[in-house]
Every structure is written in structure tokens, then in C-alpha cells.
Image (cartoon, helix red, strand yellow):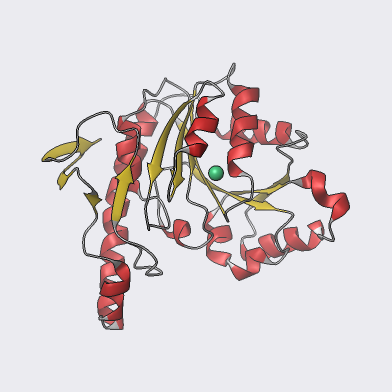
Length: 278
Ligand code: MG
């Protein structure tokens, strides 16, 4: 469920799960022990559309705060696990169709000799993106959120359970295509990376400021299409910096490889050298 916008159910349909469903038990993500049913993993109250429609604004805000604070507990556990293996996790967020999966396929192909790489794929339905990632040789777990519009830290903890993370590797978490709700949910990543393609509007950072404020890096993707478009790169960069003066911005093309070396240098400069403890 997303009380933030009331756009989905608080349920997760997992694919590629490696044990039987249809039972309830207690288990741990890192240091967080919790119990839930494994038919569908439930996250609190019923469908958001029902819950929000009948609630006062104060109660809706209280539920939203409770959900986000629960999420933050799972996110902290994820962060501790990732730190203990020196795993550098990036949460990749964007609208649908910005080219997130193509960027990851190119990045994995170029970096897989240098880093162990694992991917968590989030989509409402299908395992198509995980299959594209696995074709590169990288590990990938697909999470299907059903009607949900974002990944949360609890789901990601389950996905991490299914990965064997090598010391000092990279973990890319491709979030559900949505520029609104994923901004509010910490997954335990080191950084959010927002992808904006030049086929979208230059003013998207102004229209969806929370996501650009939450991100540390913006990738302006599909630069190979610029000669065919009336997209003002300088205006787009100015809009992003107006929302977040600290955001770093790289113009890239997953198709031609333009700018990808700068992305790899950014990853190299930000990835931890040693396992850490939080
Ligand atoms: Mg994708």
C-alpha cells in the first residue's frame, strides 16, 4: 500500500522465491525479526484506496508516518547488511521508459570484470527485466509489487536474502517506474540515482521535486536522440539544480556509451573501499 498517494495495495507478490509459500513464520532481515504470512507478504492495513478514503487527514498522516518509520527500521537493517559486505547499493529511480534497465545492462557488461554485481528488479508485473539482467551473467531477483507503486525496504530485505553478495560488490536496485512514491522510501541504499531521458520534459525536476531532491546523482539518458529533439539540456540541468543544488548530473547514452565512463568513475569514487559498520 502507498498511503503517500493511495495508489496501491500493501502486498507483495514475489517471484523467484526459493522456498515454499502458504505458511506463516518468523524470520530475520539482518537484525530485524518479524512474522508474516508467505502467501502474500502483507504490510499493515488493507488497500490504500479504501483506507485513505474513509480516514481523517490526521489519521492518514499518522498511518503514513507509521509506515515510513517501519520502513526506516528495515532500511537500517538492509544498510547494516550491505555495509558488512562492503556492498555499494544504488537505488535507481525514474519514470517508466527512461531506460533504467538498458543502462544497467550496459553498466554490467562494462563493469562485470571489475566488480561482482547483483541486481534487484522492481516492476508491478513480469520478470522480463530480471531476465534481461541475467542474460549479462549477473545475479538478479525480480520483485513484483502487484498494485504497489514502489519498492519498500521490507521487500528489498527479502530480495537480499536470495542473493549471495560477494565482498566489495555493487548492488543495483531498479525501482518501479514512478517519479513520486519511491522518493519517500529508503531501501538501505547508499544513494538514489534518478534517471531522466531527453524524450521527457526539461521541467520534470520542477514538476516532481521530491525525487530530484532525494537523489544524489541524475543521469540524463538517451543523449544520442538529442539531434532529433528540441530538448534544452541547459534548461533541464538548471531545473534539477534549482530543486537540489547538490545533485550531480551526467549526460549519458546507454545505446552509444556516451558519458558512461563518467558514470563508472562516479561509482568508483563513491564505492566503499572497506566493509563498514553502521
Ligand atoms: Mg526496467
